[in-house]
Image 1 (tube, rainbow, N blue to C red):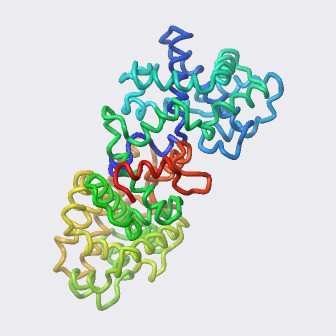
Image 2: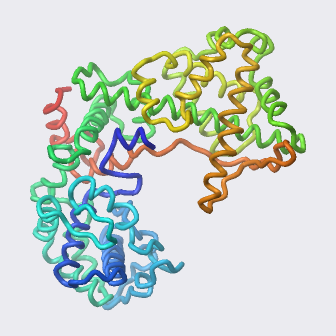
Length: 482
């Protein structure tokens, strides 16, 4: 999370549509103009009604292109609006179960505020009620109002009355739908200035600009905008051409470090699920015995007695593409929570060994991982342990890795989460034995690439066929021509 936050800042896994930034600036400004209060309950109802009406209108007008809008599941159940649909039952009870969203301050308060403050759209404050900045935020608020004046009038009326009609929904959707951003408008100009990282006073701009260029470059060269394929390319990097500009190459190195850690964690999750099955099969056993049994299954007999370095070199995968493909296969296994067989356990260990031998001594990758690491809980920590045990028998080294990174760290982190009220234990300790194994479904983390692609569509950088549009090519050429 630390890595991808630095590589693609200014949006999150749940900031799903580009136009929400201007829409929210407009809503914040309207509250300031029309309510003149700091009462949090009034603000909560105001923003929740605004979100619900926006989602409902776009579902009525164009549900196909309304993906990622807050409250869409609720809105899809109420598209038969009629002449005066009273939606307050689903908006005015923050925290209740029957609401369009349970979050008391809506999607905006839960997911957008921090990003918008970071980018200078909202004033920095710890208060629940926000205010737009007098430059960028106010510009976006005015631009949204100018781009869709009729929609804004109807939106404001619906927010005030708690009612909306079918005709209102159609009109709001036609002007303000996130998929209908007019590329010639001031609103689009301002949103693209944010997305393309063109504001010098935006601290999130350089990294977002570099990632956007690298992603569009891959789309231009491969013809695919699929998030999974883009993830592959950012690790393997065999379809990127010659990238020479320093900020772009540094960004690519950062993404590669991210995926090194990602592949390590998916391999560990397969081993973790194997451990939970073994715990149940043995009716509990001590951690050392369990670790060595998993390690022995994952190693050939010849590997178990040779040095870790010799075993790892014999088993390392032949290419970056092979490492990525192995990671995908392991992710599918982890997502099903099935018990790994001996062959699958060996694949997980092959991947760990391969990543260690390929990247363990890479200074640039190591520095990036170390800067993002807490308490050694990352690929950097794994590599450090394997380095320290390089001359030891492979069985001893793998068992030590199991004890520290799967058993020890899991119990430590689960304990920390339990202190915060969340139970995540996959096994517990009973009289020095591990008991009650619970296999779980795991997958790759979400590094926001899919959301970046959606933003690129919204902003006209990609056309409806998924190709890089002229505006996207202009960005590419402005930084480093493809």
